[in-house]
Length: 363
Image (cartoon, rainbow, N blue to C red; front, side, top):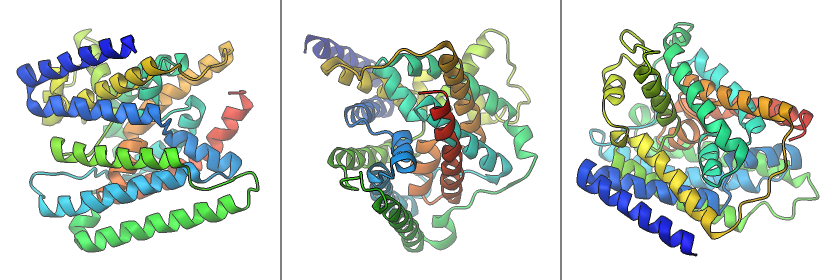
C-alpha cells in the first residue's frame, strides 16, 4: 500500500507539472492514460489473448468483450464526429498493399510476442521481462516502418474511406453495428463447438471493455483525435536517431510532413500519443504495486531471440498497417474507418499463423 501512495503522489505531481508547464489537455490525457493502463492491467484485458483463446480453445469471451468495447465507443464517437467535423478527427488509414501485409504480419507477431501495442505497454509497466525488452524493439521497428512508409505506399494505395463522411452518421453507425453483430455471431458459433468453454461472457472482461470504451471516448473528446499507441513509439525512436545524427527527416515521406516534423522538434510532452502511452505505463505500474504480477517462466535463449524479433516486427508492421489493435481496430472501427475492418481480417489471419509459431517455440 505504501508503494501505491508514493506512486499516486508522483503521478499527481507529474500531472500538475503538465498542467502548469505544458497544457491542461496534456495533463488530462495523462490521467486518461493512467486509467487506460490501470484497466488494461487490472482486468488483464488482452486483445492478443482474446484472439488466441478463440483460436486455440474456442473461447469467445475475450473477443465478445472487445466487440462490446467497439460497439460502445462507436455509439458515441461516430455521432460526435458527425456533429463536430472541424474539432474531432477519425482514425483513417489508406487502403493499401502495406495495410494488407502490415496487418497480417502484426497479427502473427503479436501472438509470438504476447502483446499488441497496448499489451506491450501495460505488461512492461507490470514488470514482465520479455515485454520490457520488447518495448524498445517495438519503438525501433515503428520508427523504421515510418521511415520506409513512402516506399511501401508506392506499391499501391487508395485514399482513406470514412463511413461517416460517405454515408452520414446514422448509416455509418448502422453498418458498424451490423459488422460487429456479424463478428459476434461468428464468434458465438465457433465457441459453441468447444465443450470446455463454460460461458462466452466474462464479467471482468466486460467491465474492462466498458471502462476502456469510456476512456477511449474521453481521449477523443480531449485530444480531438482517437486513442493511438504506435505513433508515440516511433516518435521516441526517431527523436533518439535524430539526436544521434543517425537520421535526417528532411525529404522523408513520413517525417518530412509538417505535423510529424513539428513533433520531432518539440517536447515529447506535447505529443498526444506519447503522453497517453506514458500514462498507460504509469497506470500499469500502479496496479503492479497493489498485487504481485503473474509469475513468468524462464525463457530460453531461442525464445528471447524470437520474442525480440517479433517485437521489432510489431513496430514495423503496425506502421505499415496504420495502427495496431488500438489505433487501427478500436479507433479505426469506432470512428467509421474502412481500413479498420480490413485490418481486423488480415490481422486475424496472421494470428492463425502466429499461434502456431508460438506453440512451436514453446511459449
